[in-house]
Amino acid sequence: MEKKLIYADHNATSPVRPEVVALMQELNSSVYGNASSMHLFGQKAKKCLEDSREMIAKLLNAERPEEIVFTSCGTEADNFAVKGIAWSNSRKGKHIITSSLEHPAVLNACDFLSKNGFDITYLPVNGFGLVDPEDVQKAFRNETILVSVMHANNETGTIEPIKQIGGVIREENENRYRKQLPRIYFHTDAVQSCGKINVDVQELGVDLLSLSGHKFYGPKGVGALFIRKGTYIEPVQHGGHHERNLRAGTENIAGIAGMVKALELDLGEMSAEQVRLSGLRDMLEKGIKDSIPEIEINGHHVERLANTLNVSFRHIEGESILLSLDLEGIAVSTGSACASGSSEPSHVLKAMGCDPEAAQGAVRFSLGRQNSEEDIRRILEVLPKTIDRLRSMSPVWAGGVSNKK
Ligand code: PLP
Image (cartoon, rainbow, N blue to C red; front, side, top):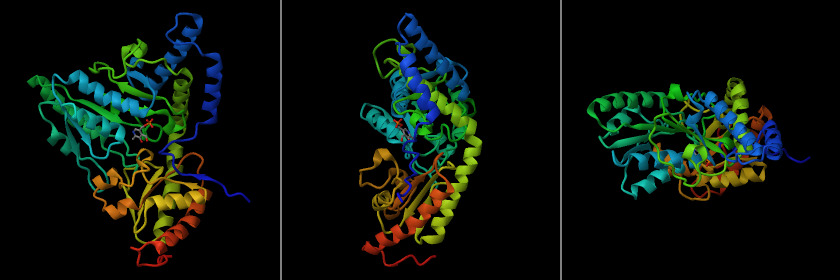
């Protein structure tokens, strides 16, 4: 009998929902006009675009549909937020605060800005991967123009205290207004949290928020940036007058509508799915702890996404585990898909103070809609044998076969 393939890498990307595929297929053949064209075909596309904008604004609790700009992905949304705020506010200040465990889309945008005259503060995190709002406050300078801290971490699933950081920034901005200092904008990368936990831009107190369709069972190649009304931001992509002059490029109508539909469907099921997934994740975590010695769970034990489990298996490389599990038809990750292929240990685990050996042996299991208890049982059947086999070949493993049964 052919073995069932198990996909446990949903933080890298997720399969598109059949309802979304059907909608996109229909729109690709029935609403193919250019939303900027004045004829009937164009107007039909424009209506579909604006309906999608209205719906996603509602789902994020934005005040106005105009606060949503569609992009080509989460990376573009992050770049737009960070560079757009930097360019438009550089005369007021050139200091940006971010955290040391952001996705490369934010970290590398900041790195680029640091080579172009901006000063970047990388906030430390604690052992669970949490940013301390007090550290944000301590990092403020008169020239600070932006704080960018992610909502949920892609590698560990740790959820950052965005609401509290938003409160600290609001208070600082009230003082700055009186002192005539530049206002600090607050961006969060919600690419991993959107569709998985409640994302409400009012509650979070953010000025900018990035998301990406393919992380919540929507299509790849579509994302969005929420930009609060009154935010002073420069476009980073220049061209035509699309997206109210903020992001040039013909809009991907079917992709945008598909992404919005996927988010709508996800939010409808979110509470029940969170309970189901955390049950599966806990079953996996307990099974690993009970059957494999010398492991560590990375990330916060409570403040984390229900679907994510990051485990360090000492004395072996995460990449060897990934490849061995792949041969068994089980897809996992060593961390961020964007960093895979690099032999460097994860910058996220490093920032959390994880020692290099534990960081090298880290594996991320990220569960999703199609995973079942049967999948977890199969992973728990294969994984201990895989770890034993790899450790028995490892020159740094003295423990022999797993002694903890
Ligand atoms: N931000 C986070 C936290 C992510 O996990 C990812 C993708 O893994 C991105 C940004 C980039 O999103 P995209 O793949 O849509 O460019």
